[in-house]
Each structure stands twice: as C-alpha cells, then as structure tokens.
Length: 362
Image (tube, rainbow, N blue to C red; front, side, top):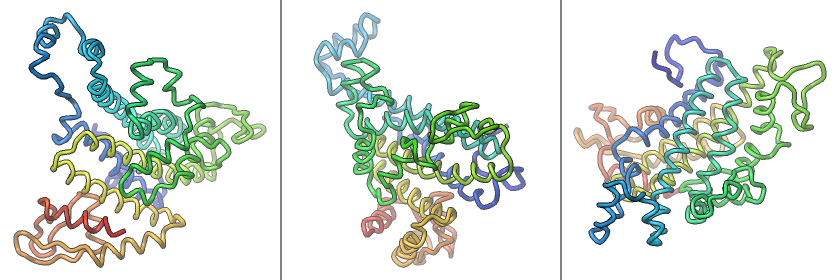
C-alpha cells in the first residue's frame, strides 16, 4: 500500500477540516525535499569529479584498492576538494534522515497519533537542521570541525558553545526571498524551553511519561499524553500545524540553498526560481489557512502577484492574467495552465524570468 501525506478523497483522517489544507501544504513542501533523490537535475550532488591527469598514479592505486580517496586528498593538502566531497556526503545523508523522520511524523499526525508525531520532531528540527544550517553558513568551518578535528563535541548540535541563534540568523540571511523567516520565531520554536508553543514542551512530554521541567511539568495526578481528552487533542493539532509548517518551510529553504550552491548550471538556476516561487505561494496560503497575524500583509502580496503576473501562451498566444485559482493550481502542480487552450505556460527560460522579475519586486 502506498503511503501518502496529502489527504485523498474519501480517506478517513483524524485531522479537523481547518487543518486539512495545512496538512496538504506540508505534503507539497515535503515533496520538494524528496526531489533531491529523484530528479535528474540533482545528479551532480551524487558525484564530485576532481582528479585530473596529473593524478593518474592515484587513480591506478585507487582502482587497485591500495589507497582511500580521502587519505590521498589529505596527504596532498587538497582541503578544498575534501570539503566539497564531505559536504555533499553529509548534506545528502543528513537530509535523507531528516526526510524520513518528517514523513513519519506528518503521517502519524494525519492518523491522530500525536504522541508519535511529536516524538519524531526533535531529531530533524533540533539536531539535523542545525547541522545543515552550519553547512550553509560556513561549510569550511564545519568540515574543519567534523573531519579535520573529528571530535564529536565540536560539532554536536547540543554544544552550548555554538550560538544557535547566531547560526539561524546567518542562515536566514543566506536564503533568497527570506521575507517570511523570523529569527526569533525559528529559534523559539526549536530551542526556547520557556516558549509555550515550542518543540521542547510538546516533544519532551510526548517522549517522557512524566516531566519535571518547570516549563512543561506534568500536572498532578496525570501522565503526559496518555489521558488526552478532546480539548487536549485540539491543542495538539493546533500547535502541531503551526510549528511544523513554519519549520518545514524554513528547513526546505535551507536545504535548497545548500543544494543549489553546488548546482550552478543554468537549468538548476531556473529550477530554483520555480521551487522558491512555489514555496512562497504555499506559505502565503498557509498564513491564510492558519489565520496567522501576518495574513493581511500577505494578502497584499497575493494581490500584487495577481496584478503583475501574466504569461503569453506559446501555443495559442493568449495572454493569461494570473488569478488566485491559478496560484492555487501552481502550488499543487508547479505550473500554470492556459485558460484558452490548456497548454502549460512554464516551459522555458523566458517564462521563468517572468517569475524571477516578479519576485524581485517584493
């Protein structure tokens, strides 16, 4: 049986209707992560070609199994090449693990298994995302600590000597179109134990039957999560579908920024624009569905898109003024459809540039 995160027609779920649209937005953004391991344009993340003819002797030794590639690179002080290889390896491995945890968490939430859904959020958002943020901010420094020093204490995400808020701030500054990401909110959701809506409170209670920390202490004559009544479940869902979308949108932005730093060809530059635009549209709808305080401000952005986004159909030459229904379709299928002949409108560099020009205006 194929497991899906989006809610299919007729499927029995435990999420109230007001969160079902948010769940499906999360499913779409989650799919942007899995593209890294599926789509052909990412294939260069899986390999690094650095050996030239002058290293033919090494190639012969490598093929014979007499030397490890990293040992050769280190012995010849090829630190940049080491950084490139290990950065890609860490990036793909950590992102893959993060994907697995987030998928299971979202899938459990859809089925109402909130204890498990919360339990699965700590590793991807507190630990693995922080590794990725450091790769984005300064991968040379991270690879030095991880590979050249090699002491786990120096790259342990729980190391209090690493200023998490500073890393988050620097990571956000490197994300193009980072308009939606608030440093304080991203930090509080992940690391501020006194923040009522943060991961620490809910995940610690989900993981431990009794908690003593003053910020999420077990109530008297109670056990965490096991005696949950309808009011408790409503609180779990309300918090989950606020925290997870915010962190998921941010995590995918960090991951994409790292990926496309490695992929600088023209095709991938176009892919990046489309993915960013799709994420922005999805986030704007998320703030609407969740009735977040920035809803009115973000509605102005949507109206700006309606007024300034137009595509000429390459087949029938009809000028398509983009409306809300078009944006709703775009974040689902990552394309626009001509209203006259039903041909797709995003098909070449010129059409991508229309979106790029729009994004540059806000």
